Length: 83
Image (cartoon, rainbow, N blue to C red; front, side):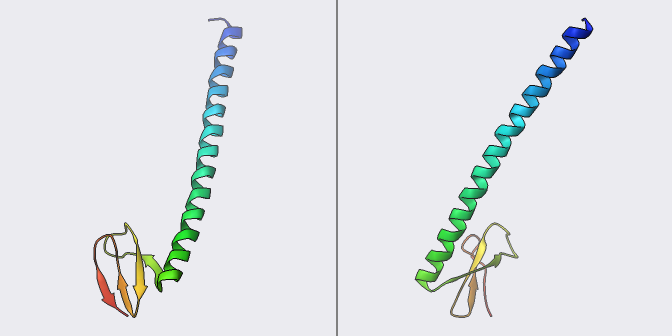
């Protein structure tokens, strides 16, 4: 391999990495926008139904807890306790 073809190969690899990084950055920005939309929607639904969104469940960590009338409830694992 000549130095010229080696530098072309390296440039091609670098361009591929840059393209992947740009695509990944775009996907991440899209996911973050979607997450913010969902968070706002969930907060609005909670307000409309008289609930509050609490913290992540300390038992399963797979869902945020819901709070209503002094009861904290995890919709994922069913854990509940009173405040």
